[in-house]
Structure formats: structure tokens, C-alpha cells
Image (cartoon, rainbow, N blue to C red; front, side, top):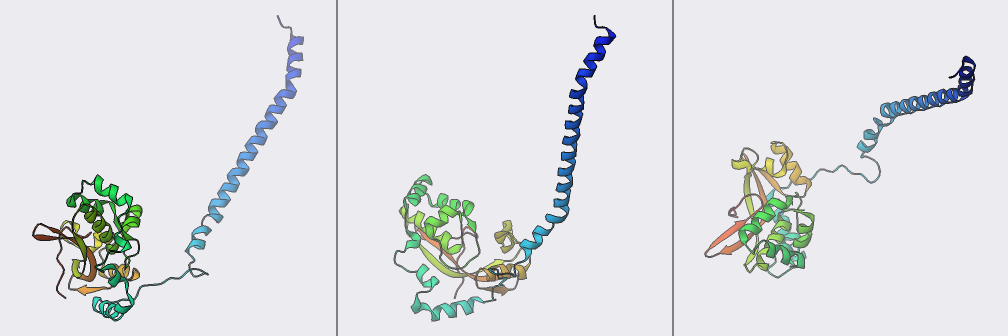
Length: 251
């Protein structure tokens, strides 16, 4: 049994330990309060300044450029003048085999995985390759497949390469289309195609920024595009990213 004297001695022995624990606890609480103060300072002063720094695009290396409005007629006149210089349109529509439709090992495997079926080929390009609004043949079939994105030129190159590897004849078609700005059946319109607001001016500016010629025809966007055509039996099938079968307008 412990006497009162023993209890006093034990209490005196533990006193330095207790003081040490209190001191450590106080130091830890002070450190947490200091970190909280620094975090609050950063959130209130440093973080709000970051978007302002990133929003400043007028410095060196930045340029805020809007594409110039160009009608389809103006674009055709320009490229007809530059035809002898092998413009993008001429090169893309050349009857000779070009690197754009080069059949790589990946294209061979993809065509085999799609059972060399034209319908499955079309649905693959439609559902797995995102449209990006820019003009000209820039990527070709293989890079469009790797990126999973491309414009109408490059998507047509991928589709043609897959069709040719599957034993079908396919070629480019360059023509003019009328596509509703918004309110199209089954969302077949420019608004849903480009994933933007249903505003004709905004849609045209998106196209102009990508170097694509277009103008307004009533409630439609009038633009020149490239798509693939494949012969099935006696009826040609026009394959484009916008809809399943679209025939080119005259002119």
C-alpha cells in the first residue's frame, strides 16, 4: 500500500514529464495555427492573382487573332488561282495515292477488327473520331487514328484508307453543303456538330478561326467540305462526319 509520502514522491517525479508534454502540445498547436494563417493568406492574396496572370495574353508570345470572314466563292477563287502551286485542296483531291491515305500496320489491324465492313468503318469514324474545325489535310489517316480527332479532310483520309484496305473503292469528294445552324432533325446541325451555342455569328467565327470558308444562306450555314464516297453495288454512298448520306450541291 502506498503512503501519502510515496504518492508525493511519485507526483514530484512525474511533474517534469507532464510539463514537457504540455510544452510539446502548445508548440504543436501554435504550429498548426501558423500554417492555417499562412494558408488563409495564400488563398486570399496569391490564388486570386493567378487567373489574372494567365488571362494576360497580350505579352510576348501571345496573339489574340480572329479569323477573317471568307465566303466559299472567295475560297474557291483563291485556290483555283493557286492550283499550279499544289494547294491543300489540290493535294488532298489528287487521284494519285498520297501519304494521307497511307495504309499503316495500325490501319490494317483496325480494318480487320471492323470485319472489313463499310458500315462498321463509317460508324467507327463517326463515333470515335472527334471533329476539329481547321482547314486542309494535315494529319492523314494514321495520325487521325492515333489522335482520335481531325477535320473533314483527315477523317475522310482515315475512312478511305480503311475502305481501301477492306477491298472497296473510295475517293474524296469536295463539295458545298447547306447545314442548319440549329434546330436540325436529330441534332444534325452546326450547333451540336461544333458543341457551341446556337448563334449563327458565333458558329461562323469558330469556322473562320480554323481557316474554313463559310457564309449564311437563310437559316443554313453554307460551306465547302471534303468527304468520302464509296461505291456499293450500283449506288454510290456519300460518307461524311455530319450525317450518313449527303449529296453535294451543284457548283
